[in-house]
Length: 106
Image 1: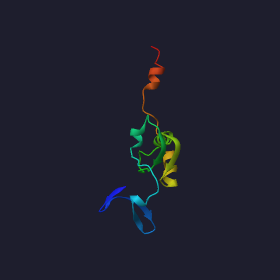
Image 2: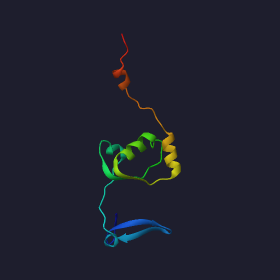
Image 3: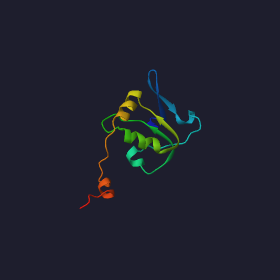
Image 4: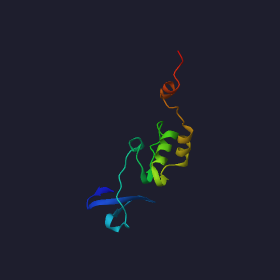
C-alpha cells in the first residue's frame, strides 16, 4: 500500500507498468509489515515473503534464515538466477565458538 491523492491504494505490476487499485476493491485481506531478514532472527511468522536485494550479502545463510522464519508458507519473489547465486554463496561463519568448545591443551 502506498499513499495516493485519494488516500491509500494498492499497486500491482501489470503489462503496462504499475496499476493502482483502491483498497475497498481488494478482497478480504490482512495488513502486513516488512522487516529485514536480519531483524527477523529468533521470530516466527505464518507466511514469509522474501523480496531479495541481490548483492554480495544475499547468501545461503540469509536465504536459510528467511525460509526458517515461516511456520506455514514461504514465497520467494526474486529470479531463479538470484536464488541459485545465493545458494552458491556459502560464507563460513566467523566465530570463535570452536575454540571455546575445544580449547587448545596447554
